[in-house]
Image 1 (cartoon, rainbow, N blue to C red):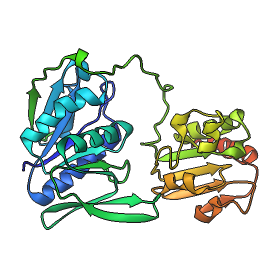
Image 2 (image 1 turned 90 degrees about the vertical axis):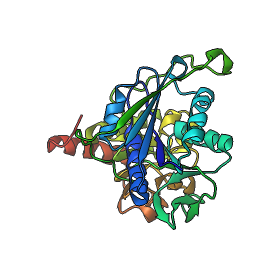
Image 3 (image 1 turned 120 degrees about the horizontal axis):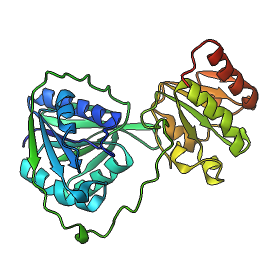
Image 4 (image 1 turned 180 degrees about the vertical axis):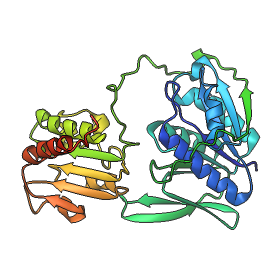
Length: 329
């Protein structure tokens, strides 16, 4: 078996922070076993990212470029990556726990006849075997698991591990891998990308999240939350209930059927605290709740609580941040 591999997710030529965090986990595993880290870059016109991957901790970078890989699609990505993994025989393949990473992890596990551990929050090497801890049952339990077959496929939860610091003096090997694909052989194609608003912060990478529930009262009730999020440099989150009624797009949903977030601070505004929503907050360090109902379940998990009208408290908080010169936007 040959080292630890990590798939470096990229979108439109940019690598998200969660991918670098995943690379950092790969480094830890490789150091514990005295082996090397191979990073895999896939796309079109992404070769310049290889030097950055070396600086961030990769010992080797395999660059796979082809027009059919420009946008993520499971079929061509599997067609290219599976043979490389079979040839390289790594002990483990790590991927960021994003929508793309989880989809690719499941496909790799199926094609390689192994297992995928999703949303890993701890890793270790025990008796030369990689073990991982992942939450189960909406975060009520944590399981320590290992995969008997190789390679083990692991997806790494965002912000569960530190991002490595770049070292511009690091040296490594960059290998260009020839890719032969027939684009017409794959049943799916990307028609267009719906761009996120400029400057919008991703829930997966945010250090602060401002979340809204039914208590905001309607679509316009999210406007003061957006202002607070801009002032804090935060991402905007929401419960499933308000997404289902169309008050805010699905991409903002946090919870069991939405995104799992791990910010340092989560400000829950008008959120009752249903278990389905709380399951997406297991990695949050501090929760601040603003709710008119003093019996709302959210107060049982919040470190700080304000029992009052959010439409009064949130604008006042935003104004105070600006008055003190602490607002970022």
